[in-house]
Amino acid sequence: MIEQSEPKFIVDSMLGRLAVWLRILGYDTEFHSGPGRNELLLRSLKEDRIIITRDTHFTRRQVIRFIFIQSDFLREQVQQLLQQYPNEIKVRKERLFSRCTLCNHIVIHIGKEQVRGRVAPFIYESIKQFSYCALCDKIYWPGTHWEKLLKDLAGMGAHGE
Ligand SMILES: [Zn+2]
Image (cartoon, rainbow, N blue to C red):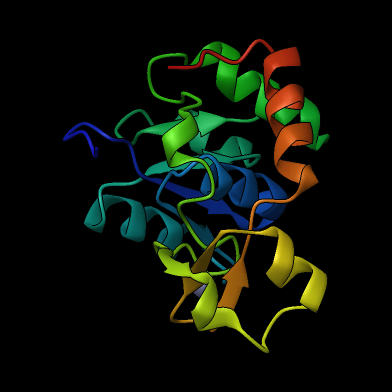
């Protein structure tokens, strides 16, 4: 279920790995790889996205919504988001891995028969349901990294729902 107040984000070029994490959590997160603060700013306003940045420049602008990330380390960055914004950023099991980590597009669930020949035989045999990004033509499936991720998040004091 998608809430109306679901926050959307735009992450600056210094925080690419954090963008991937937000997508894994199911948040609509664009990655601003291009140059220029003004473009980033315009995009955030036009698309109603909260800026997530390491750029101190934004701390002097009061009119925009942004989150200033303090750490250079991914784990601490995720931790900061979860602890500082418990109402905006939550871990909801049903939303995990609902977006493509490469392009932010929502993935669709597909059945086994649709991935036949496209994944390794042992994957095909052991996994019941797959996810698919039509834009990237990429197939996802739940692996052991899911459990590790959930454990990691719990260790970071994530607020689940
Ligand atoms: Zn994709």
